[in-house]
Length: 145
Ligand code: SF4
View 1: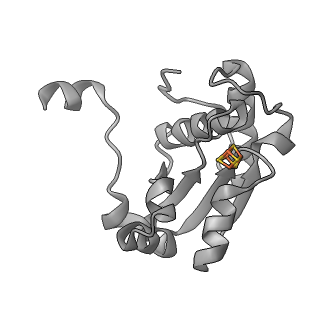
View 2: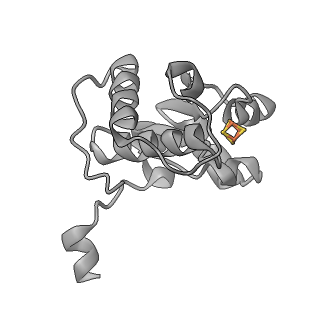
């Protein structure tokens, strides 16, 4: 526990504080664009600016706890990898509002069957999304990717 407190960026509890947080749901799909989506979610979370990622798969699985977090969120930020828009479709199906929606493939990233990402490109996308959501500034994350 001591090591966790020293080295890990502990997140605000999304269940406890959803109303005070912008909650990010990224697809984490198994392709370049899905991995960039996940990178961006981690990067924005680690900026400690009142936004944090939550478990997208739990929403898809119908977890009431997570659906309620999304419904209570100050703002929801949905990050899809490609035009299939899987996260957006889950939200639409469940009637959860989407405040900001992004599709990484539409932001200049090619969908390639790889889990590798170009970190510089991913940082550029993170900054672009931060700007559009209104966070501004450059990445200050401790993203270890
Ligand atoms: S949005 Fe695209 S990359 Fe993301 S999970 Fe769906 S198919 Fe995969």
